[in-house]
Image 1 (tube, rainbow, N blue to C red):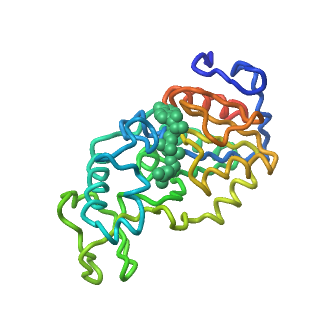
Image 2: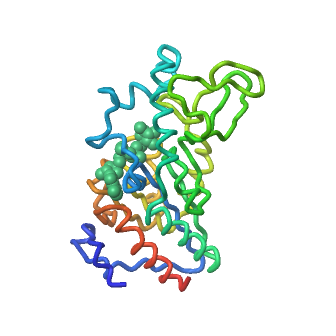
Length: 262
Ligand code: APR
């Protein structure tokens, strides 16, 4: 590997080859992914130029209030995204992270993948991420709490009734603005114990996920950041690896695995 896809802006613009991770047996790598990691699979990001939907930004659609007032609009938005899931495949970034996890696991190095993405591409690549913002492939009944994994009912005009209690419209099992992310205590623990933390494809503006980078720094982790644009929460302490995740992550994951002899 020559690492040519990787250029680091942190630490005086050092090239990738100069970055030493010093991973040891006690190391723990924690990765946070965002919409940029799935962008190369053909799924739109939230804040990019393709971030608007029918002229609205996502903050107007992804809320409990919107679901209460205009459920048809919200449902159409998610049904389009659920349909799109059936048309895309994991990209090299998803696959590299899954392979890295398997190699680190074998080498006895801790690994945790946390994603803000509501798609299922990490899982389809072989990972089992913590979905802090939920998953659009799962529907949840707000009345009885029933959850079903469903990508069969994709009509944008037809709500899906709850198979358990008969309530007429299940919602996507995603975390909307104003709602509490899933497993956040677990995530704080994971990130707090990281020795290497990688944030990839996230703009660093939506909290609490955007605060994880600082939590990792506070815990003494080496922090790596990949994105097309500099995220809001980037600091001079971070190693910034600009570029497309599908190009940067395979090299980066290979390097991380080699560091521990995995
Ligand atoms: N490779 C790497 N990074 C990319 C790529 C790519 N191919 N394409 C875009 N990016 C970067 C952009 O530069 C941007 O910094 O990915 C980031 C995407 O930012 P957002 O669209 O804000 O996505 P994300 O940070 O995941 O959003 C967080 O906001 O709307 C909510 O719940 C939603 O989980 C989402 C949360």
